[in-house]
Image (cartoon, rainbow, N blue to C red):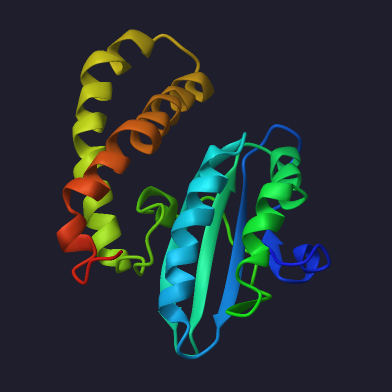
Length: 199
């Protein structure tokens, strides 16, 4: 979602990742006063385009800060797919449509390990929920899974070496939370997590 090809290095920050590892890009846009509606309409179109691009694993928009700054968080399966998007004609086409509306500015590097990735609403411009709400929602998702793992899995690993037993819990819990439970909970509690809603 960068602008001219020169801007793909100036207005973007990405988490570093080796080949095959997921990577997150955070882009910040400064929108000209009075052009917010046009910019938000544009975000829906480029979000659909990015999500259809090979390797994309999600796009989220956060509400503007003071000064009309919007933040886009894009997740990719690996750095090479990300690079392909940044150099793609599809991205360039969408950016040309917004040259007189907004300017991309630099942003700080973000981590892919935060809970915010469980509470993203692709294609929206809503603020991330307060951390205490994210913690409580994560507890509601993790506690039942912890009970099931302790009941169904742990008894069968009692004879295993400690490092191997310790690895079983996160290997089972984290994928279930990330891909199955948390996306559903974030939508189920959407009105509570995001009381002001979003487009």
